[in-house]
Length: 414
Image 1: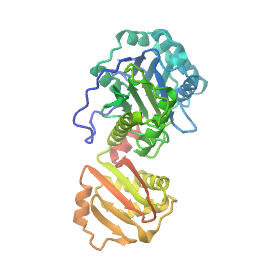
Image 2 (image 1 turned 45 degrees about the vertical axis):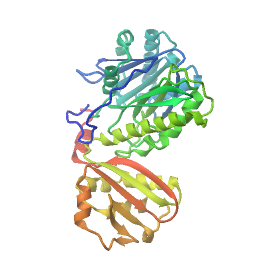
Image 3 (image 1 turned 45 degrees about the horizontal axis):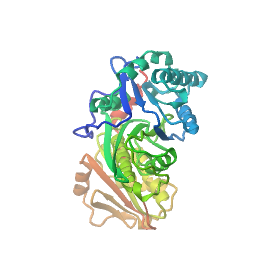
Image 4 (image 1 turned 30 degrees about the vertical axis):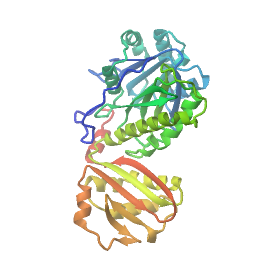
């Protein structure tokens, strides 16, 4: 359940998201797990809305992930999105498949569309059957109340929260062939965060006119530099889902190739929005008090740099050192060495912030404990590693590992 204490890394203000033609939102309390708070999000979408998605690569995906993958293959587009919090409907066997089918049927009747035009996502406890009959009546009421305003976007972001401490929203605008288009996005995630595709749950909407094939290519590419570069605890969720919806209401000229120069502005805006949402997830890591950016350069390839960066970011010893404000660069050396990627101890250099702490396989001759410790006391810290081997580079966001993380996860089902 969402903590009563907002992360100290949360943004000071939340953006007011503009309306997007063809998108209407409503939230409700269905009593799926939580009492006294919203736990259902319904999004109604105009006919002709196209959708793309990326999902967890976990070999134990949730029933909603299986449903969305199959729905995308039909090419019918999307008329509705249903998201619930409190129950992931994962590892629930035939009951889970039946529950997601019933959810789509209930939503389809309420929205006036076929079940395969309904996208579904769930987040929460794994292994507990989901009673989809609780959606009956609730979704019809949501359809009647759904609206596009700024408050609806904020309430939508709150309804999908679990252990999140703040709603995650972002918006951008861009031009496509002379037409202004808008992009809005929401996300949730604080624990079980090490995406191997997308994010925990994130839903992005635009009024641009774009075919599914182009949306898919843009989304898959944007994921690589955003949600696939964030980790809280190294655990990839069974439910990770990122969906991008395009209503076509902006009326821009349709573009059939993702590499068309007319999409440069839109691509940049989409990538920037995805990065912001991913950073919000790192800022809201369970129990987090510090945001850590890990930058690796001088690797033999970008892929190698990425794996080394994740090794550093996922190391409990590195993360606890950050929590304790200890400039323990030896733990960074350990994480580089264990990554299984090309590295040369005697070429390695490490910085905490702008303070070089190690170089050429040893402590920096000018090392200052006072200067390094001052960096570690900051709420946002950059750890930079130069392997001195090539041109490969990567950056990953993570957070510290505190006692609060253990407390939150020690009784998650209680």
